[in-house]
Image 1 (cartoon, rainbow, N blue to C red):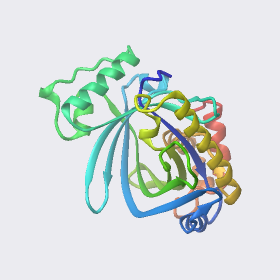
Image 2: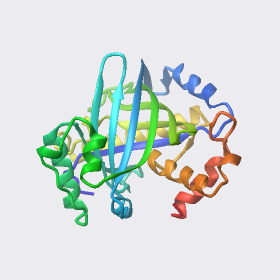
Image 3: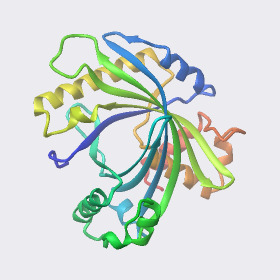
Image 4: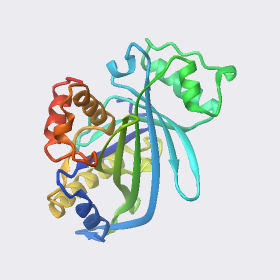
Length: 285
């Protein structure tokens, strides 16, 4: 990874239970996990994500992804374009990857697309003001991208605060409780609960923090994960992104076996995760 690039450091979890809502409520009602304080923001953010690639699947082959995100709550609606790179593991064993996210406007979109072209040289991109608009779908389709995945997430945010005197920002991470819905066609929606613990983006900015401080944040993230899993043993670490999880679900749908792994409401059953993990790990997507 290029250490001078913005990146994300986050951990992902699933709840392989027939009643995941009960566990989500237990987490929401928890205020202290040993030396960490949980501060519930009591706000729900609706997130719509769309992923894009060219017809040759060049981004997928190079392990990059291009995402359009719309975030909405009672106060604001924002649009973002995000470029993500391959996932690697840092010295603390946490997954990290390049993540460049910008608000949707001509200059920011062009800068991200140029960076994508630099990282993936096979991509041909021709964006100028004549084919730009405020509608991301129209713009990306005009310049040769196709939508490959759509999902919606209802997100509740909890701040994770270190309850001790340390030389870092007290709220060093965010705990996200996500109810994820994948849209595969007009009649088929598949849902599951995903939990993410992500370092505050300002804390992983290489231009704002020294390497020793970055390592300290990583250590706190690993420590919190350990204590979080001890507190909630029903929660299991899930080393796959929502994007890859959605691709694996799509593969099961295409193979005609998805009905065995979802309930009548379209929620993933606990047995589904073993099949999904096998597909992703064995690269059978």
